[in-house]
Length: 271
Ligand SMILES: [Zn+2]
Image 1 (cartoon, rainbow, N blue to C red):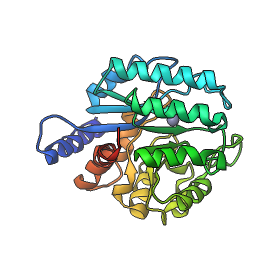
Image 2: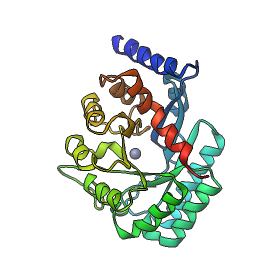
Image 3: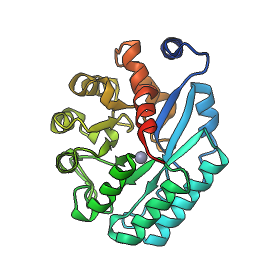
């Protein structure tokens, strides 16, 4: 109960600092459930003050999806965006192994379907040369690239990028707007790996990450490089907000993380 009060208090502080009644929180990392939003997503957002969800659809979560699977997943994401304009936005999912066909899908998702960025999962490492033409296209559009990143002690997926792959890509493309998802999984080491690359932001999504990891990210990167994401419906929106609210941050830092940073990135994109 105390925590709920505390969270509302902090969130209302964010709203106050905007000088508006309407809360402007952005959740920059959610997924569709099958081909649609999880039925609880919008109601949870309403209850907790999330103004905009930015999602991606990974279809059946096949590690090496075919072009048709990715294309259908992006169609599903585009349909959800159309149905919930101003409440839901999306990243175009790409499997870089599909080459020119996938680049042309990426272009049409940005130019025709109002998507706001690109999502890479585990079809190959993010610094594989196969990815470079996609990164160059994202740079041309000035849109963010959200990259699933994790470092596990056991059961690392094949081609699952870690903070080292992110750092290598960021060094090669300093103009790329990179968001390292899940703060790299092993936050303590991942923050040091990517800290020198100021074009890399991190998102807070991921269940094993708690408030102390959010605090480490803010301390080592600065609040302007940390972006709120929940990983809904894989993770719980309330607990993901809670770990940011509970990280001992100032209202200004909270405002940046819970929406301000992403708002700035969205304003930059050429669409
Ligand atoms: Zn995710």
